[in-house]
Length: 265
Image (tube, rainbow, N blue to C red; front, side, top):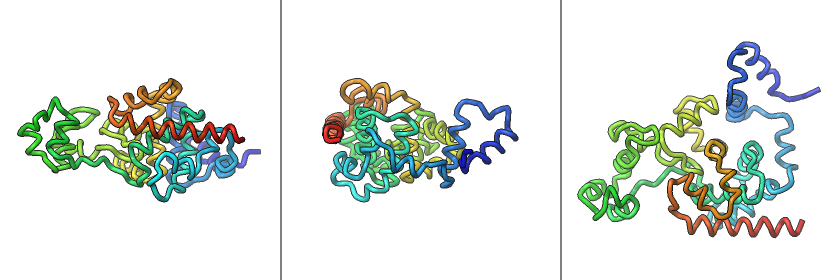
C-alpha cells in the first residue's frame, strides 16, 4: 500500500474538479504548489539522498567548480538535484549546461535581480541600435536603473509601455534571470500561484531553481544541451551570445570534473 502523504490531497481535488483534473500541467502545478508549502512527497528525501548517476554528482564541490567565489552553496544542492530529477536534466551535458546557466546568470546569489545600473557608455555598447554614441537618450538614462529597465524592456515579452513599470518589475529574476511579464505569468500559472506570489517565490532558492527548470523545459533546452558547445542554449535563453566566453569556461570545467568522477567511479 502506498504511504504517499499527497495521495489524499490529489484524491480530494480530483473528486471536486473532475473536469479539469487531467488538463495539461494541472498535476504538475499541484505538486509544485505543495512543494512551495513544504508538503512532503513519498520517499522524496530518501530519493534525493540516494540517487546516483550524473545527478548524484551534484554537490557543493561541483557547484564550486562552476562558481569558485560563491558562498553558502550547500543550500543550492538539493533544489538543483530535485529540479534535474523532475525535468530530466539527467546527463553530464545537460547538467553542466543547466548549472552553467545558473552560475553565469545569477551567480548562486539568493534573490538575484538584474542589475540595470548602466552608464550611458555601457548602454551604447549593449544596445547600439538604441543608444549609439552614446546619444541624448542614453545620457538622460545614465545610472537610472528603474528608468533604463522600463525603457529597454517596454512593449516586449508581455510588458506594457515604459509608464507601466513592467520593465523594472519583471526584469531578470532569480538564478536564471527570468525576464518579462509573459514568462512570469506563465510560470505563475504552471505552479498555481498568483503573479505576485510567483515573483516573490522566484527570489527564494527553491522557487528560483524551479523557475529555471520550468523555463528550461518550456524552451526545449535539454535538446539544445545535447548538441556540442553552449551557443544554442545561450541564444535560446538570452537571444544572443552575451557572456559566451564565461559560459564556455564554466561548462568545460563542469564537464571535465564530472567526467573525472565518472572515470573514478
